[in-house]
Image (cartoon, rainbow, N blue to C red; front, top):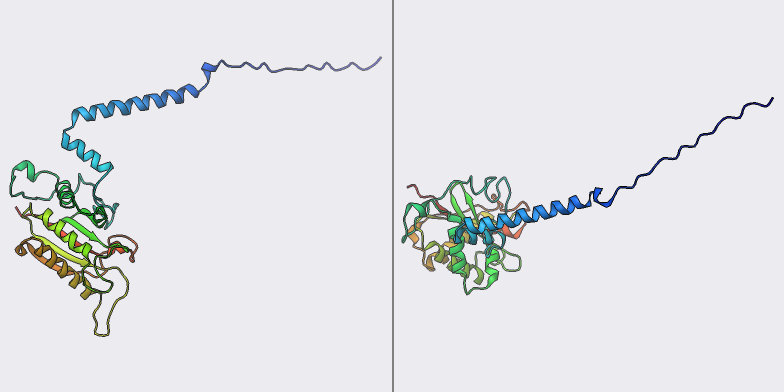
Length: 258
């Protein structure tokens, strides 16, 4: 008798193909549609719930005519780690409109608009030299250097025509407020000295005084300028100590004690 042959059983898996509507592609398309509709209704709500000035402010935020706080982030830059909402308000008193609403407004926006108006008719390149930020002392207008368009001759306090035009714009912008002003000169960290000991400290101080004279000659009453000093390279605006923007004039609109 021969050995019993084993029975071989072959199982074939049954493959069920799902219809197209059970796939996941439609979910992605639907999510995109819902997102677009949310954005649309948010836009409609903003247009209906905001004033003309607020809408202009939103537009300026995304497409500013003048760079506002071009250097941002935490630490010593821009808002010192604070948002505009958290930054203390600066009391800027208008000569023509000294209402509580004006005093509780947004001085940074007001000053940027004033600078923008003062730059009308000037070359657009001037706006590259201006940034505005808040500090514990008040609102700071930074007039920054550019390698291609310096504010001063290299290693000297001789002003360039660009600085002269910027001084006129700043004086016009400051004409509508009464706060005192502080002017500080800054250099980069390039070592600079003469055999007689003239260094970046003296250079930054001399440049600050030149800026003071230019702004005064442009119409800012000298009595409003309460401090002029130089800080050499001790307070860089950007991390790179040799960056041209660290060579600058800082004009601070000091807080009103009232």
